[in-house]
Image 1 (cartoon, rainbow, N blue to C red):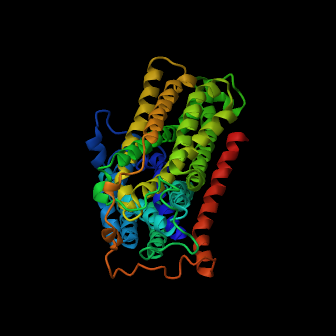
Image 2: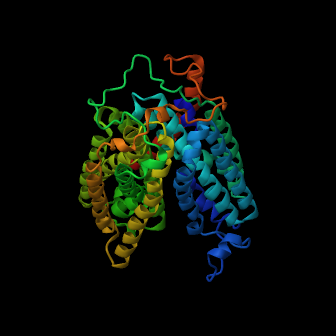
Image 3: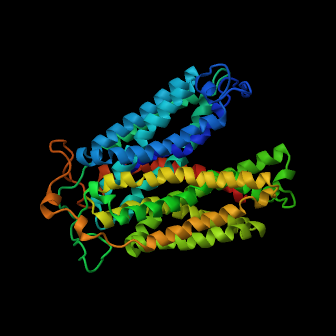
Length: 517
């Protein structure tokens, strides 16, 4: 089950790495330099023009569409996933994500931005939502004794998708680049074919356990032993009526808002704060650098961004697994308390010129950002039971959509206001860090208010015993999975996802060397 889940998440996780296409696409007509549109040309012109190149800002709307559609599609079709099973949801996710890439390739070839928005942004965004929640709901059911570890394994793949996809996309674009093409539409076609194979293998590798299945030798804990773990199931139609749902929604939204704001500005933040210190000349501020020096530190900042991605990935598995021991509530208390300290101390570390301290602080912050995503499905399973956890998780992901707007807006607009006010580049992020620390204070309070769900919301025993997945879909039963041991099929499945992960880690570490080299 875990390799099947990873196969899907490693593919759709490339959504995080789409920025690798922005600069080549911004000169897809000019090839070597952008062909500028008229100064008075607006967004509508960009959507349909074939005579001038797109701006990066126009392309960047796809990134917004990704995560708005991810949250909304997961919320809308989460109930359908629970009824029809994860295999069908994985199949539809593969068709949407890979089909969206092919539509985008046509959009690039014909130079129609609206086709890219429709293909990858809307249709691909729907694939993101279904592909994101289908592995989570499946693994939680297979690992009732290690819910955190199970969701950590699945969601780790989403964080690792860009780590693999970005260097692969760069290699493909360089290979396809000609005097008449920047190589992006060809890259989209190849990625669509590769991802379709992996996602279909993942989808058809799914099974869900029989009703009442538990691992051999494991006994569910008594209600008195772990009061924060529900002994029943709440129906998806009732979950959002409880205060616990909205408190966890706030917890996720605030944790993600703080992390995603930093992740989106990691590269310019490091460059503007440390300037010449990144290549051994700390007396030079960012504004003092010449174009060649700025190009040099951009390469160093790419290593910083790669390192943060690695922390993000590892944090998803580490913190979610640790939550099985600590409990979900205590894990989030750790995220918020430690995060408040790290965000509040970040300006001081920057002013001291402590590059290592600054990088380590934000590495830990991004590990907790990823850990928050991976721990929240287990938190929901503890609160509401596992029967409808996929659908409930889908509705909760609207918190991610909200955070995807809130976090970057706070960071970007405060930065612009500080620059306009004449604040030195090395200090423009100080107020931002304090505000993000304030977000975490609110998250800490919301987490403290979470208590066990009132018994009145739980389903009756006879209703809870009825299977959710429709009969005859051929995916119920262990099919030999869950008995323990490592046979040849399992080994091959792990190699199929392990080799790409190893490739991504190697590529990331190569860029990290530039940061400390």
